[in-house]
Amino acid sequence: MTVLQAISGAAGRVSLRKRMIVAYWFFHTLMAAFVAVPLMGVAISNLSHSRYGSELVKGFDIAWLVELYFYVQGSPLSAIVPTLLLAVFLLFMGSIFLAGGAVKMLVYDGPDYSPRMFYEGCGRYFWRFLRLTLYSLLFYGSVLILQRILRKLAEKAWGEGMEDHQLIIAGWVVSGLTIVLCGVVSTAMDYAKVRLVSDDSRKSLRAAFGSMRLVLTHLGKTMGAWLVLMVILAVFVGLYLPVSNWLQGGGAGKVLALIVVQQLYVFSRVWLRMMAWGTAAELDPFVRPKPLPPPEPVYVPVAVEPEPPEFAAGAEAEPEV
Image 1 (tube, rainbow, N blue to C red):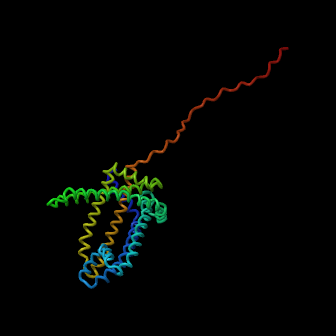
Image 2: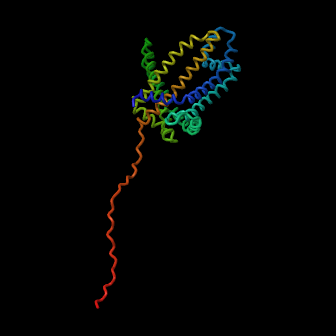
Image 3: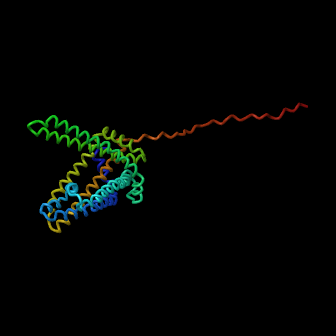
């Protein structure tokens, strides 16, 4: 199976489960609203006195809000931090919970979407996926450590020079390598989820290391599919950013159009997440063929000759007269 065939098959699997995508999108939108509404209220109340504040609210820079909290203690923002932490926790746990049902429905290609089967998979694979997510931090941490080492080496080699372009190019190379390595880890965890579901296994750690070895062994197919999905994501981002920037700062009509465009963008991200799992489900049987079951015994009919008849003793001969 080629990469394009796997992506086409994944698109077919995902298209049969539109209600599952809507449920996933609704959860993420609900979590975003849970955080955005109180944060926007704090931002407007703290910045309404300046024109610079209105520009910041347009972009809604969460990093600025967090930085403001550390410099302005006792402000209304301090009451929002627990809400933000709670939303992050709920988003983390809810995403893992829903992933169990989504991967199950994408691995088992036969039946159509069923809410009962979906939520049954959510509960069945929650703890396995949670352990897998925690194990994935080992791989992501290794990537970040490698990135820091490479940046230190680049600064040591070109940091003292008169020209900065060598250091800038080295930074680009390190950033690109980090993105690719994070993609390898993310792809391996997708295959690990598929393995846990298809094998009905509870060994999350073995699935993590086995899937990492699988991705590195079949790098062309596994990362080729990742690259295609990243190109599609880049197209979505390239279409979303200019339109959203043009719609910002307009009247009520543009505000409503901006909300619709933002939700379409979130929906496309959810669709790509499902596509990644569906592609892994398509390629997994080909890159990791399951061992064949032992052959069943074959019974060959054999003609059995009948045994010779037993000779019974006859009557004793009578004496002649």
